[in-house]
Length: 161
Image (tube, rainbow, N blue to C red; front, side):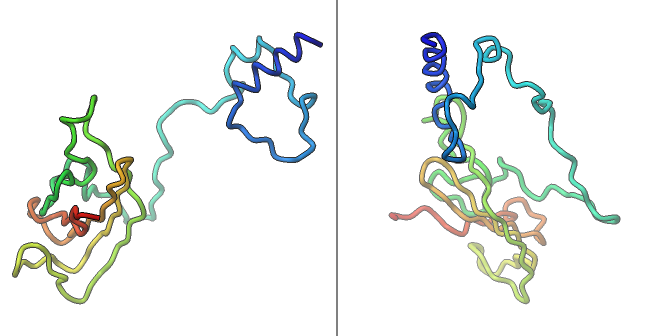
């Protein structure tokens, strides 16, 4: 009994953060042995890629932006679509931003942008970006624009707040 309690204490430290659903869970319902702890997860999912995208007939995927694409109007450390320009202060690499919800819009007229009198087109993909540095931002991918210098517009420049 003493060895079983020691094992349960050791396992409870290893299982910190895992919550059990149901008030009736007790130490008797969890059967762990030292042997099973060292063998990994039985019948775990294979560690391979990801599922293919399924598209309707006559549709295709096309890359419209990637992380290192430059922004038309950089601001502070926000200079690229998916990375912050902070590599010199990071120990490994620039901070990656996490894409948030995106929205595809077709507008009736040119919404304008940083470059006066430039036609930004009518089709846009708005993309929110998050990161661990409390510096979220929103970009607009100008889908009708071929010029890489005007392709991605920063809509939320760095400010005092």
